[in-house]
Each structure stands twice: as structure tokens, then as C-alpha cells.
Picture (tube, rainbow, N blue to C red):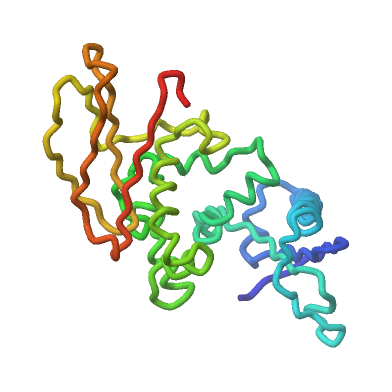
Length: 260
């Protein structure tokens, strides 16, 4: 990539290189913008150092080795290299594969920003029956394919969760997406969950209800006791689903009127 110039800013743990394309010069609207750019680059470096202090020094999440050596003029030391460039005119908002997997850490370092809330309208909270690998969830499958070849995103998750624990893990994830008390710590700022069906029980049986669920998705039903239903009645739930060997799981959650 051809750049007309670059400015370097070096901190104790991070080396920042601010890059400028040849056409960036003409795009500057007012004289003195170069000073503003340098100031912003320094602000970025200071921010990176603060993030480093939380993620690396405090949480122990060490980055991959930088690979720098004193013999390499472009990478002369072990400090993490970060490249800063204005990509706004190109219509790029971050790099979405990394953006979509970084929101948890972002919330750990800057708990009050909550930038990820803007993405929740297309999340499993609002679209539980949409597969996580579908284009409805920020093209995750395409990103995984580009990053690691062509396996399912499940392969990477299995490395951490494990095959045997996956059904319970994903069922709990689906349950949390209905926002029960004790789930997400910031659920008060999340959009309302979408239920496949809600029903007030007034008769001995609801009858069978059918719903199609694709892989990496779930479906939720909310049942409430009717006002005339005897408190001595007991609820029986029967599920006729796909084979357990396929990773199918059912989770029954009881909630009390006060919300717990």
C-alpha cells in the first residue's frame, strides 16, 4: 500500500504508526489539520496504553509475540505495533469480524460506553430462530470461512466448551437471551426478547405445537398460569425433538412473579 507519509508514536508497551494516503492531504478541510491528526494519534496511543494496563497487566491477556528485532528497521523492538489510518471516507466501520468478537473485552475496559447495544437489534435476543452462522447475524459464517478456511464456527467454540457440554452451553445461552434475572449484568439496557409463543394456561392441555429450528438457533415459549387455574395443578412438558446426538437440548426455566 502506497503511503505519502507516516508518523510514529511510541509508548512503553505499544508502538503506533499513523499512516496517510497521498489523497488524504487534499481531503483536509482546514489548515493545521496535521497538528490535529498528531494530537489524535497521541490520544489513541494513550488509550492503547490504558487498555494494555487492563487487559495485559491486570487480566493477564498477553498478545501474540510482536516478532520485532533490533535488526529490523520497520519493527525494531518487542512493543506491539498498531497502525492508525482514517478509513471513514471508505465507508468502513471497524473490521467486523474482530469488532463482533471484541465487544466483551470493550465492556470490561470501558463498562459505561455500551457501544455494542446498537448491534442487539439483529442479535439472537430479537432473532433467536436465526442461525448464528447466517447472514442475519453480521455474516459470521463468511468471516469464519475467510479466517480459518471452511469449517463451521462451531469448531472454534468446541475447542473451549467441548462437544459433550455444547448442548447445555447453547441452551443456557438461549435462556439468557430471554433476559431472566441473574443473566446479563446489563440486561436493563437490552431490547425486549422475542418469544415464539406466549400462552396463558386455562385448560388441562395446550396440545402439540410445532416449530422449525435450524442449527445454532433456538426457540422459546412463555407459559403463564391462568387466574382460575388451581395452584395444585402441575405442569408437564413433553418435547419431541431431533436426536440428542445432533446436539438438541431442552431447558425448562421457572420464573416467579417478582421476576426471579
